[in-house]
Image 1 (cartoon, rainbow, N blue to C red):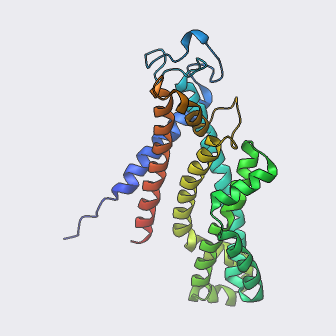
Image 2: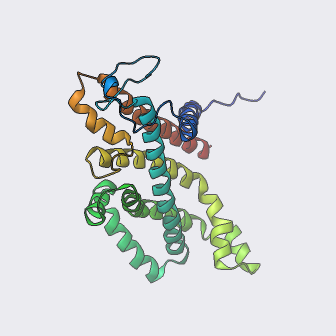
Length: 269
């Protein structure tokens, strides 16, 4: 009699939360009830209603439409950030972990020096040099995320580079690049995939934090973090203005966190 497989509730819940959020964002790409930047003085601080499901802000803009646009912006920044961090992190981690030696010592000491700074603090330094704006935030966060991905990939390559299947591939004449990216990297993907989801989580919080401080995405483009910053002065006048953008950030972070834990649990089975 076979044992019943235990359900991975974190993976299920994370998948549902993240999938629902992605669906809403996809809908928001093609349709929003109102122009997110259209101002209507007559609707200033309008409450929650059928016409405005999340109310209106201090300029009479529909909060629901702006939340859809802001969620898209946040996800786009997170996607680009994680892509930059993953691509360069894999390249750096694979080379240092596979070859080792003096190259590993030099590159990883530089990587460790950069990794010693918190990602958000490092991104703030880059933003102070590059200036605010969505593209600069992507570049700054992408660079700041490279060291963490490089460390993870390097650790996996150190673990697998002396395995029998790698030695067998070398005996069969496989080149180093083929061994690294065809034989070793796929075995490192479960751990790397979990790190990528965590990266999305961190990127969402970092983008929201930087936009909240006014050095991230700039007006008139909507950003969840900037909406929170603008709403704090009207917390008692129009509470929905702050509640809904904050709830969406929590929704994103919780979804990615549960998804990462679920993937991690699956990889350990």
